[in-house]
Image (cartoon, rainbow over all chains, first blue to last red; front, side, top):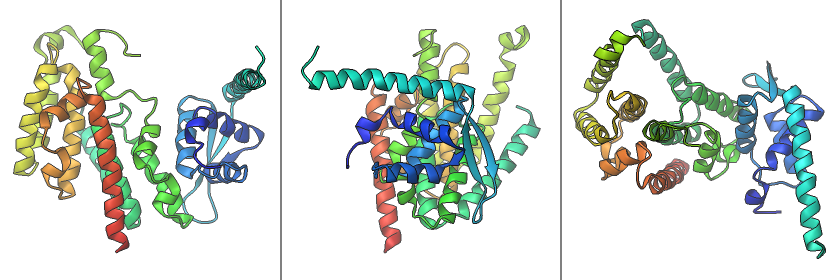
Length: 108
Length: 105
Length: 118
């Protein structure tokens, strides 16, 4: 689906946390995963800025590893604070999603 | 700042500039325009250069993967820059804080 | 900072001197712009001028980098240096300035990449 940028703002970070949470991975792989999921507008640059923020906020552990071609790649894994942040994200997501569903179903 | 630091800083900056020069033309163009924009808005963590060297790291990976620069960061370069510095205070923020005598946010 | 430095501002003086040394290495039209920038930023200064240091440093870096690229000063700063300085200090109208810089950035990229493609 096109033009999700505005709507995805704020939730994309949670998606990236979730992806990193399941296994240590790097920017390009994360972007591919999001694209395959159907978020086709997400480019590597977007993921880069999110990873930078996660790193600055001390939520990830970063390891540089050599890659087959080109410069070494930065691999990201969640640390304890990152896992906590991920749990918070899902809690918030459920809260918002439940209420929005309710609204659509006409409930109160 | 000691003279030593200035010289060391210049050396590092020169090495950085050399890396930028080694990028393909489309990357170089975008990098320079980004840098110009970032110098104007002046996020605070600029002086140590980690933001800029990080961008070059990222660009070099894109080059190695055979991508065009806009394919890598999207068409809206300004939006990419804004995302990069989203939670950094800018010079303007710091100035405004010094005027009001408290934190701006 | 010790009291002596606070009174004499001697550490600041040294930084100001560094700025001027850097500025002296700029091309003539850039030096004129630097003088103008200082003049316009002065009203934003506090008693010691300390709050302006990072802003001036950023402005000087911008001038140094763009001069090294051989860009014309006009291409860098536009017509309204006063407005540019207000925006640097986060003063009135800085938001619209930032929007303009944003547009400039994307326009420049589009134009230069198109030229590259031939």
